[in-house]
Length: 260
Image (cartoon, rainbow, N blue to C red):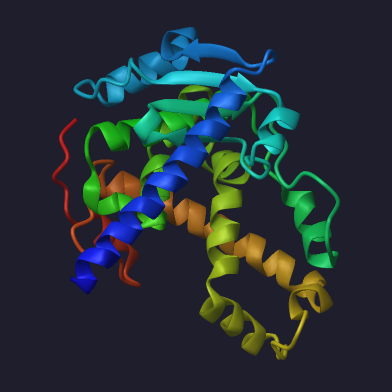
């Protein structure tokens, strides 16, 4: 009986969260400054996705371009865009500024120098590949945020190459925020850096030693981005995760069972 009550509690909690999210999205959608689009309004992206994933239909996904103030007002301040699967819609800011706002410390101030320069098209292709992933029911990968993002980023590489961008440029302009975030969130990786530099990981050490840590993190992020592209070229785009991620990155590409 207790288990049933727990299940019911979490079910009700999820319904409440979804209801609140739906209300916030609807307020953005109905705002007078918001413009509705569809994938056909982005023919270059539509062509790329149709050729890459010919058996996945995402034509029903609605795209809403919203002003930054509107996204911020309704709880989407820190994202340039997002795909909401159960509503089959994408929210995207009309103007994308990564690491916007005043830096909270020296670490953020130095990191802002490496902020990616994105436009609306970058956000749309990224979120549309999330929609592809959901439509293809890549259930295993969706449980692990890193693998889902890795799938999306690597499957956008050829899109940028068709625009004439080189791999290093793609990493610096598109991949870097994701790779930096992954490294910064990996405490063991940060501790290794600190140990090599003889830095004591005390309170506020990120700001205290920002001039040392930021270049190291950016360099490692660039290497990580290039490594992702190399693995993508070696193992292919059709990633299906069937078990929790391991430290061996190549294992995330070892199960190819997704023929789009």
